[in-house]
Image (cartoon, rainbow, N blue to C red; front, side, top):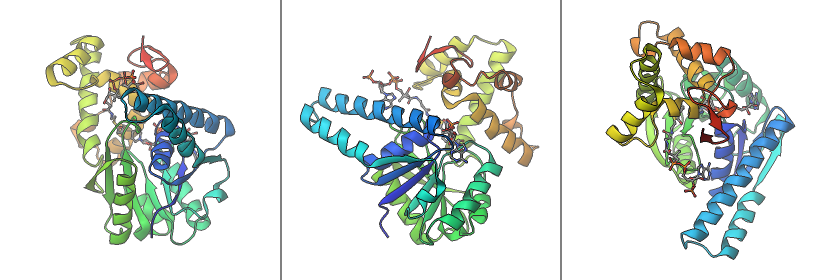
Length: 297
Ligand code: CAA
Ligand code: NAD
């Protein structure tokens, strides 16, 4: 089976990017949101990003102005939005990118298991939850994978493809091929907490927040140290703001509950406080830094 029609559930930070790269890869894509306003925001971001990539293509001499216009219109033309789950019924693949809440994800997959055709492959973009639990909830564990994209999806070149003990070999191969069609390099991961990247990255972010909370160094100095000393494109506190403090906290809470004896998964106090205050990072204009739109102010 070739994946031609893709549903993406959630059109937030990650979902809008997944919609876009799937359309750039040649798929017809339906984006599902809970409310029209969220859908409009996500689709608006896609439009801006496509325009940016088209103008960069021209700047770099990869396309003429006319080719860029045609490319943008073709990609845009493959995307539609909906707030009705039933519109995903005939998708070949559905990628879930809703909030990092296992209960919400399981509820969604149970419903999609009833709605979607028997051949539909399901994938979750979860950062931290066991893929197998969502696979069971869907009622079709053999047609279920993790497809973990990275933020910002349009620019990051990796996708982790996660298989459970029950994932069918052909389904796994289709999911990898989809990741490649989206322009990503797939790596294979087992269904372990955080897969490869987040198992390493999130404890590192936690250590940086702890340093900041203890007053060992300022946020700007911690970030500059990792950028200039280790060649990272962003420092860990900027990255926490970029990922979202709410998402980072949800990842850690899930892990603390399941692995209470793992010291690497501790929750920094300032992370809890800031989330309670609605300071979620770049998306709300304040986290460990203040933000002016997409830029740190
Ligand atoms: N679409 C199109 N273009 C975009 C874009 C988007 N979504 N986002 C940024 N750009 C463009 C910018 O407009 C800019 O264009 P110009 O050069 O014309 O100005 C260009 O890309 C570079 O962007 P920036 O100037 O903002 O900054 P940068 O050079 O630092 O690159 C970055 C940005 C690629 C994000 C880089 O900082 C980076 O790699 N950061 C690390 C990101 C990272 O670690 N991500 C993983 C997060 S963890 C995760 O995702 C997993 C999880 O489960 C939590
Ligand atoms: P987000 O809050 O930006 O977006 C989530 C979107 O899902 C929202 O627009 C919300 O309205 C929508 N939504 C919630 N419940 C829904 C439902 N039942 N049906 C349809 N839409 C629903 O979150 P995000 O940062 O895009 O994260 C989404 C997922 O991707 C999470 O599982 C997260 O852990 C994972 N992830 C996040 C990052 C990151 O850097 N933020 C990176 C990789 C993976």
